[in-house]
Amino acid sequence: MGVGRFVYTPILPLMHTQAALSAGAGANLATANYAGYLVGAVAGILAPVLVRSRAVLRACLLLLTGTLAAMPLTHSTLVWGLLRLAAGVASALVFVVAAGSLLHHLREHPPHRSGWAFGGVGGGIALSGLLVLVVRPVADWRTAWWAAAVLAALLAAASWNLRPDEGPAATAGGGSARPRTRRWFGALFVSYTLEGVGYIVAGTFLVAAVGQSSPGWVGSGAWVLVGLAAVPSSALWARLGRRWSRPGLLLTALVVQAVGIALPALVGGTAAALGSAVLFGATFIGVSTLVLATGAHLRFPRSVALLTAGYSVGQILGPLVVAPLLHHGYDWALLLAALTVLTAAAAAAVLRVGFPHHMVVEGHAVPEQQRESTEDARPAAPGP
View 1 (cartoon, rainbow, N blue to C red):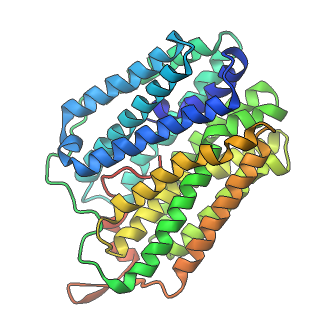
View 2: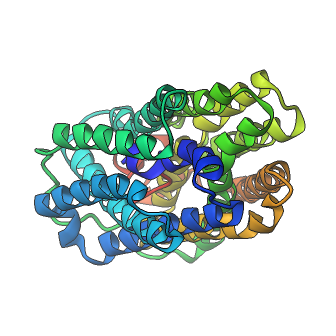
View 3: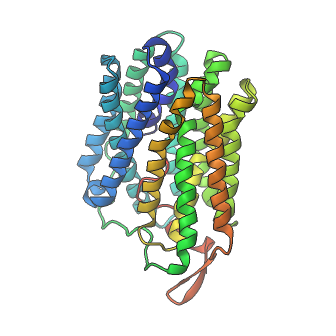
């Protein structure tokens, strides 16, 4: 899923220079993928049978691989858009099925174990960046897509026999609506939706932005670092959530991410690009981990579904919002994204005010950290 969803980012600069893809068209293709991801996420929420089906998982693995292989067969931006739309639907369902499976089978294990599994998305990002780094000096954009399809096929074969969770779908958020939690959930929803807008701009254009002012290898190398930093991030933030307040950690992660996004635009150079990659990679999956765990802690009805929908809408809006700025390069787009993430951090700061760290469950006050074992993540489609 990490390869199929995110390999577009390191290939995008090649398509600009070799396939005559304009900056605006590149943003539109990204939006098509994010729209598909929203469709897949909502389908998984509304039709739980999909996320418990091995046939659906296998079909989506094949579809995701096929969309990568088909990209070089045309120069039509319309067809490219349809392929990225289909890739978005497939990647969302793959993630939902895989998340449901691992959370079911690791239910009795510490939550950081699930976090390491979510780090597989980061592994896919790192592999996609490494692949383009190797292919770029010797081949063109078409070969990059075909190589990505081969890599995705190998990973699909390795995951072919994954057993989905065959039990009844968990109710996201659990419990009845408590009016006193609505204001905190509202702040969380706003924060996560804004994070969707800001993070996806960097997730789409970081490699292209770095490539403007650095040697060609730096862009793909930065994407490898994003993936490597993302691999342990979910497990790390889950561990930290056992000792410190999740709203405070969320605020910290968002501020760090905003700095990482703005760094290439404000400083420039190889060191800033690589530092940006590490800060961004270490936070974007961790933010999703913290947000979904906080929503579950608040026991707001269908919290995961609502948060996922807001985040997905933010991802769709992000490329559209910055598209007019891309005619002048990527710096202003990154700065606007960083400002948006800082606004998300401000909403997280509001969330901290009077936050109910001890929720009453069956007559007992249970600390936020002690409820982590069942709430850190749910089988829906978070950030990636």
